[in-house]
Image (tube, rainbow, N blue to C red; front, side, top):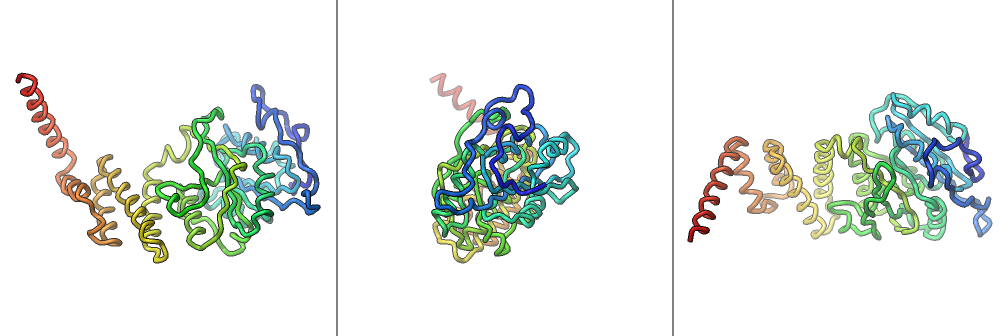
Length: 353
């Protein structure tokens, strides 16, 4: 295992599985020269991939890193003890990895921090084992890190793709703006590179977060006044599939989002209009709980909302739904049934006129 000090090509890597074509299977990025046009060495790029039972996708992730044609690459894979074919695939590419390990861990956030602490790069990226970089991502990131020396976080565009890699839609990525960070981020980790200063300063992923660790991390960096720079030429792909955590553990993600919103609202440096957007996000979480008939959770979050922002945060619709939540699911269904029956009679009488 070692640092990659020369551009890798298709000839260097294992043969692609049968039937796999295109990037990064039968296509590669143009190898970069040993040095930048200014004569300096390319900044070292460290990529950390947290892995767990994504054998269906991880080879594409690995090849999208190694075939960037980049000459100063440190690739680290932290596997959480996969029981599928992930380890077999990782071992195929072991000669090109700076470090890899497979052992039980405390989840994706823990794996990421293990990798970040191992890394020695000037730029550090994190790519999930079911996502991948698009051609040229490292070149544009490296150039931007030199051109925009004051930027601490450099990020680019992200395509949402299906299991086969077909683009579903493009994420709404834009120049950094606090107001565009709500309700969703204007930045995604799949196409983001962090200057090493971020980690030298002691900033790491919150290991208590299982789903919104990226959302939480970007917000903490923003509130600490680190500088973000959007480079549209940097591009990556974020895969949507049935086994993704966002689909299988939605309740945990919803809980973590609400916790992040509470954290943000308590920040005394946030401008009033941004705080109002945070409140709006929290109200949205409450309304979603009510719609899913999670009345106990709905009332709990309403109580928390009032505790941090007073009763002024409650809209008339929230108050009304709070009352309905006390009625109970069975009685609420009965009221809806009666309401629909009355409306049905009214419509029938109107037709008879």
